[in-house]
Length: 119
Image: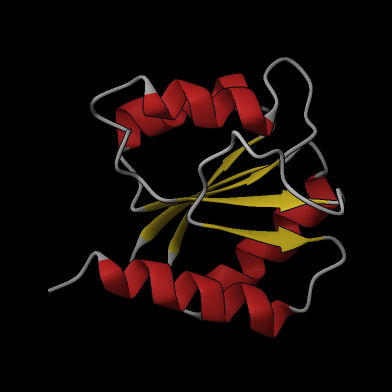
């Protein structure tokens, strides 16, 4: 399966998403903020990134902008998790999930995005 990077400052949500993705057979990388996620993505090259929008040090929006500016990461699909009622219009994401989310919705989105990268 795919290597997926999950970035969130809530360790309980990180644990829950990691368990959900592991049940699907994915390898999960964890980051507690956007800066750590960017460093991890640059070294590990995940197939997909799932990130919270509101995090300390570098938020999800800033992380998405950093990916867009990095030729090695610009094509990595990013899923944004947010409590916001709608996304800022300037953010380019492969998908988003509103908190609280149904695990089945997250799995369906991950399946769709990870299957797009396979031949």
